[in-house]
Length: 296
Image 1 (cartoon, rainbow, N blue to C red):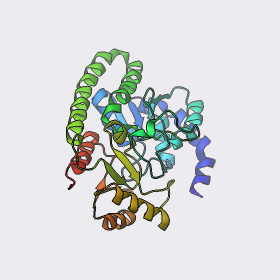
Image 2: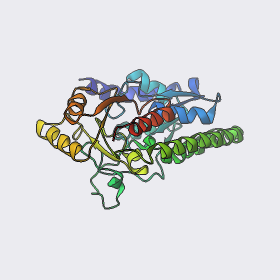
Image 3: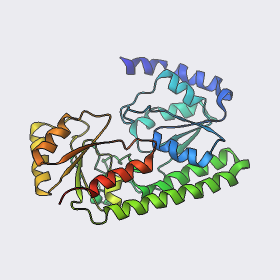
């Protein structure tokens, strides 16, 4: 019902967005909190950055409220993650009805991981170019520090186009940001170099890029976006025992029941993580520290 009402209201919301554009000329909108982190480091106090998906919500199932859509339409630019399916459902009409709204794809140039989203994915090999063309690209590109520079570079390019007068400031801020990203990458590389087990379990497969770029293997509990069947749970337990997995992650927006069951079955520890945290670098380092602290 909610989706039906949203569809009916959508054209009117777009019209409202268009008529109120001048009111929030200094506002930029992003999809998720990690994007807000990157963009705020670049723009400083020159723009206000609005996050579309509120904390605690999943960006892959989120349906924007009418007020959120109006605020989005009133922004100077919308920075989408790039591979999130829901973003592409309505951004076409949004652009059509708001021709002055700049749409920015933050994932341009990033090599996607395919086939690891929504099932028991396996690892760093998921980026193999032999992927099935029907596979969707994994949208969680921000989960690796090695993607973050290009992700942020796409933001910088768009901001400079919007405000050429302050281009020097934005580029200087970007240089500082890249130094922070490099420090995060070095910390992750150091922490993950000699960990006892290079495989881990996570409820929702949001760490595929971390796995690919730091030579890890991710196995997800969730199967094609749904809770696993008893047979799938048994398969994962057997696999975890075979690979000596001792750590299970679950995102704070998901039910922890299945994660706790699997952790008990394999004698692992279970930890709540938040890949959608604003403190993007701190959360990735915390995840790496947990992986490094596993018992052999």
